[in-house]
Length: 332
Ligand SMILES: Nc1nc2c(ncn2[C@@H]2O[C@H](COP(=O)(O)OP(=O)(O)OP(=O)(O)O)[C@@H](O)[C@H]2O)c(=O)[nH]1
Image (cartoon, rainbow, N blue to C red; front, side, top):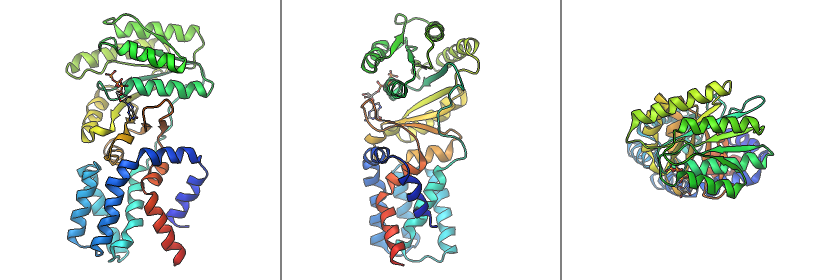
């Protein structure tokens, strides 16, 4: 069975609404990236050096990342030789196949949850990337699955951060444990864990401060939070999710490298994918870091957070290309 048929079959088993959410959320990337590739293929017709150069430019423009693009182009060259492809139109399926390969990993993209009892999830990331919004959306998701949820306002540094989390708490009907602005975040976490245990909570979602200008202090603060949580709940935190703003492209990759090294990050959340044409950053991150993308933000509303699924992602991105490749297959 061909790659496209397999891809389509596995996807058709999943819910249509999830597919549509990905499709909608990736519209800007699809226009800037996939449609430009299609245009290039139609215009150049032959695969030569000039073709590869233009393809390289398009991929880099979509923030796939220079290193990843080089790997991809090298792999394409090998495949083109092996399959004796001359016509650019025959490259579409090979390109989609290679990109899917880059996105797929052996590791699990699902959130790690405690087998029983309390699960603690810590959110880290610089200011403005969408941490609070992500926590609110995830609280809503867990609540609608019937779980008991609590949030901890651990960003006691940024003015308004506690109130912002409280607004989300009211919106989704989840309590927020807080202290006053400027309080020790580790003390907030201690209170939150105690409250979670007393109330029989399933999931505790913890916000943290995101200032970058004072890196050493931030890392010390995170370490202190870790120690408190670890002492109070065995095997916690179950996830440390680094939230990254997809619209910042390569900056997001640098932040992931910086935070990933120092703060025990276990997975990534990519927000604002709907607001960028640079969705290729997902491919760069997947290829250049050893960290799985666990969640993606595809809008500002409560239910605009999706578990990341590489097949759904590729399907949404290459919707047009997959159709044309299927068409060719049926004809032959
Ligand atoms: N379009 C879109 N907007 C988003 C998404 N996620 C967050 N936002 C918006 O991004 C802005 C910043 O989000 P916040 O949640 O305030 O960011 P934050 O990381 O908590 O900021 P700090 O509290 O300063 O660390 C808000 O206007 C959100 O509505 C998303 O997936 N898509």
